[in-house]
Each structure stands twice: as structure tokens, then as C-alpha cells.
Length: 228
Image (cartoon, rainbow, N blue to C red):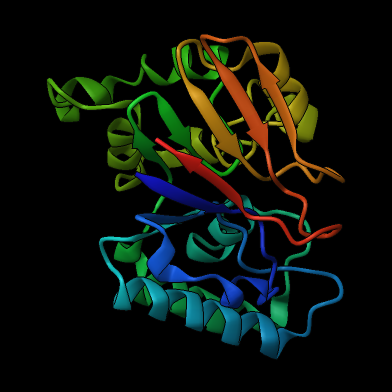
């Protein structure tokens, strides 16, 4: 399947130039809101149009949740930088009215897509959640388990900021730092993530596992194409 992966937009509408028909899947990595130079009205309208794109192409478009989105979706929890008090009511309603359209992970075989990434250390902790014994299916993928937990009240671990980002422990899938991912990316998986701003696309590849960082839209217009 031909995939197009779109990194952290933060209100930018550069995605509108893509040819939807040229791809089997369009995956947005989250962080649709909060930017220091993009006006509030543009951020709001851009999010509405992305949501409409998902509604128009429900089987083709995947909308993942970033840390900047989680702070409105689950307000007052999971606070992040750039929070806009004046947009809180509108964004919280917009995210919650369309909550079923969003998820935290998408997977195709050994290719795993989340906002910030999955590390071995964090994943080991995740697998110890007592809840998983009740909700995990026999054939569940990593993404399936992450998305199931996201739908429960025990989602805190997913959105935890690690010690590198001012929190504690290992960063969750909307908060893992690039340094964590480089040192401890999940064994056996090839990940594509945003979250940590980088001036150009960076790939760290160990043949049996890899991570590609694509949060570059503050510098260049780039969407990551791949077959998987």
C-alpha cells in the first residue's frame, strides 16, 4: 500500500496540495493546533477541514493524536506548551464532537505510526497495565492495544511526558523525545514519528528496527511517502 505521512501541522494548510487519489493511506501524525505564528481562526478552520477530509475518506485517512491535541481533547489534563486559553472551549468541543475519528496509533505490518514513538522501556511498562489482561485480543497488534487503552480512563501512560520533557519516567507515545527514540526505539518495528522539531528528515536505521523523524514543516514542506 502506498502511504503518505503528514507531520505536525500546527495550523498550517500545506497539506491541501496533496493528491488524495495517489495514495492508499494518508496518515496525519497529530499536533493540528498550537503555533506561535498561525492565527487562531486559521488553526480552527484547518482542523475542521482535516476532520472533513477524514469524513469524506474514512477508510483512507488516519488521524492520530499529538500532545498538543490531547491537552484540548482531555482538558484540563496533559497540558503542553502553546496552550491557547481563548481557543479552549472551541477546540475541546471540536475534538470531542469528532473523537471517534481520532486514534493514537496506526500500524501496517512492522511499520508503526504514532505521534512521538514507542520505546522499549516505555512499552515494557505499558504491557504491565492490569487492564490489558481484560481488553487485549489474541491477535491484537501494538497499535490495537494502544488504541484500546486510549479509549479507557487508564490512558495516562500514553500521554505521559518523560523526564527529558519535564515529566518523569519514560515518555509516552505522544511525548517520547528524539533522544529516547534514538537510544531505545522499539525492537522489531519501523516507526515514523513527528513531535520533535528537526530541520530535515532524519532516519536512524538498524535494519531490524528504525525510526524516521519528519517534524520538519517549520523549515520545509515535506510529506513522507512509503510503501508498506
